[in-house]
Amino acid sequence: MAGYVILTDSSCDLPADLAEELKLQVIPLTFSVGGESYRNYLDGREISTEYFYALLRQGRTAYTSAVNVETFRTYMEPILTAGADILFLSFSSALSGTFQNSLAAASMLAQQYPERAIRCVDTRCASLGQGLLAYLAAERRDEGASLDELTAFAEERSRHICHWFTVDDPRYLKRGGRAAPDNSAVGARLHVEPILRVDEYGCLVGAEKVRGRKAAMRALVDKAEATASPAFGQTVFISHGDCPGDAGLLADMVRARLRPRRVTVNPVGPVIGAHSGPGTLALFFLGEKR
Image (cartoon, rainbow, N blue to C red; front, side, top):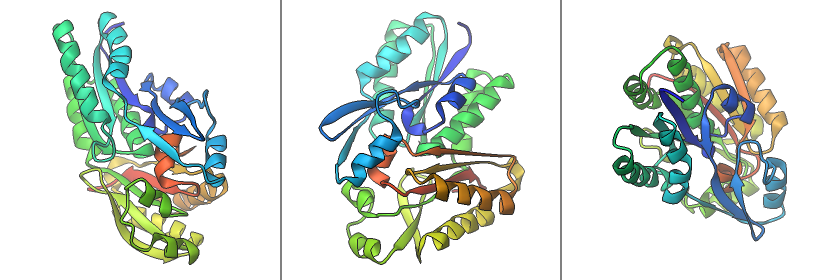
């Protein structure tokens, strides 16, 4: 092995075959639901996303954990011993302790492998926003970028990864501490769907509220149309909380109005889905700013 490896964590929600095609190494986060613990592999080898969301719909509560230092060592050390450096693209530090643990692991390993380099980037992204950054980083790697060049690219480009999404039931955000507990129950009963985004700090913030699912999908595409930057040559990623039909309709709207070069659709994995719930729809693209 030579050069460097792009490492990320499974909250990137990329399709497993795409992550393999991009030569990404992915660390699974852990979660528990229904009294059982699982690792969130992209290929769903321990639990499928469909079964996970079925458990949530049955009223089961899911709990998530950050990648701990020892797990980082387990994944990083073989790369270093093989003679390669590492660029780690982390889940937003505003939503998880994963980034801080990556720094701790990198510091420990740097003492053992002083000739190797480990770069850790707080993407301030989540789900396929993080996945989109990993995708773009892999493209730049294949164009011949050095580790330092790619680190600088990832830090700069992360500021342009726009995340717009809606949730079917805001109470999942409330339970996970991702939203204020104001009137989420009332909103759920009245079919009022919040339109939210991830800001430049990697935090979830509300933008507006609309009535009904179709209005929410139109609002997401409106936001993308208003803020997407043509300078980037758009690749659009869409993630969904076990609602493939709605995701397909959203993808059709995106193709018709934005005409991107690529649209990738994939489920929201269990780690993010534990906090967003069934019925989530999210749109990710590049803009001048978040």
